[in-house]
Length: 247
Image (cartoon, rainbow, N blue to C red):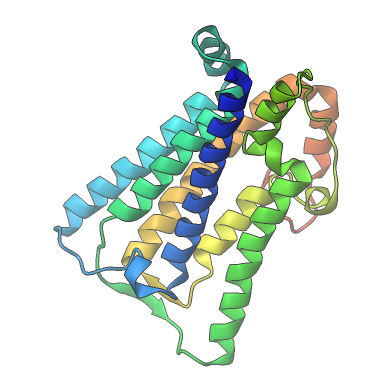
């Protein structure tokens, strides 16, 4: 019964995490005004900026702390290890919903592309391409392991959990973190870049970069020379031009 409850918990966490991603995408798409982050400003600019910085910091700190091995080890002392990833997904999803719903509008416009123009549609092609890359990348890793379902399913079947093998396929041949690249592309490819959207894009892009640096350290610890060799020939976040040194 306990294992069934753990599996049900992971399903609920998965649904909340997945729904939060969809809300995030819709909120920056500029296609559904009611869900958009671009609402009427109600706070003074400096207070809105401070609030938004706090929301990004809360989201980023939670991700960085809960993704570290030290937290995972501490978690396993008090809770069943199979739900560690699901708990990460659940809390991340709830904080992402909070981030989107509580994001403070800031007013102003940076650029606005005329609706119906060729450039307008090209930008939306980039927008949907970015989010497609993000979702496809989760399956290239192992979507169900990434979202915590594989762990509790194996526990339910009385099978030991095994770490995923390191493999370089598809997008990963061109960039080490296509999931983050897709998210950044989706954030910046908008026909209507308001100050509100710009702050949102800058804040989450900064999180992606910082989070990636922490993740790189963990990957080196886990895969050692194999990952260092991959690191030396593949760019971190920008898939072009061909890797020589850093980004």
